[in-house]
Amino acid sequence: MKRVLALLGSPRAGGNSETLAQAVLRGAEKTENTTDMIRLNGMALGGCIDCRKCWSKGTPCIIGDGMAEVHSKIHEADVIVFATPLYWYTWSAQMKPVWDRFLPFMHEKAEWDLRGKKAVLLSTAGDDKPDAFEGLVFSFRTSCDLLGMDHADPLLAYGVYKKGDALKGKWVTKAEELGKSL
Ligand SMILES: Cc1cc2nc3c(=O)[nH]c(=O)nc-3n(C[C@H](O)[C@H](O)[C@H](O)COP(=O)(O)O)c2cc1C
Picture (spheres, helix red, strand yellow):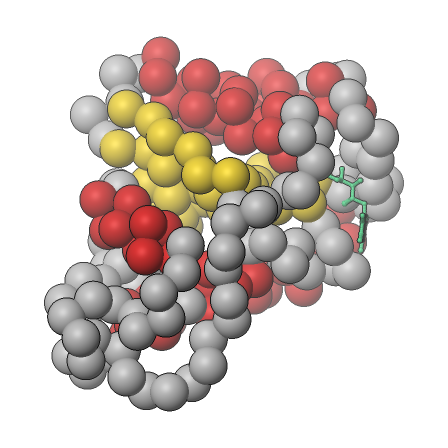
């Protein structure tokens, strides 16, 4: 049994990323995993301030904001699903600070790290060609490699622009299958 955590980076409640993230979690539950989701939108999540004071107060980061909860839940999870709409060919503004704030996991005094965890990229885009995700996939793969996370094949749902588009076609089935395979 694995603990699967989805980080939802869309500001649109019930939007395409949420529809597919829920489908991944449904699939994961069918294979006896436990699941949880954090809605990043609306949480106080500042960017990294490069103070190099990670772990100096016994916690990953000295900034006392919503990232404390995200850090803890990530530490407890075996699988992390990064669910983001494609915004300007990269992460949404809700998801980007999460990556920036992964610096404590690489710090020389790190008490927690991400090595061996599985990372899954789930993204949605209005563009009708999958190469729209190239920049995002590069960022995801290289960052995972640096952090020592394993990465599964991403689910990249293209041609989904309006709310509800992810319900059309094959995307929900693919997302459930992905969830079952975690
Ligand atoms: C600010 C903004 C930037 C976007 N940038 C892109 C983009 O670069 N490429 C693309 O294909 N779609 C882009 N889109 C469309 C979204 O990726 C698409 O509507 C997606 O399905 C939204 O997912 P959601 O319903 O989970 O929020 C953008 C949408 C917004 C609001």
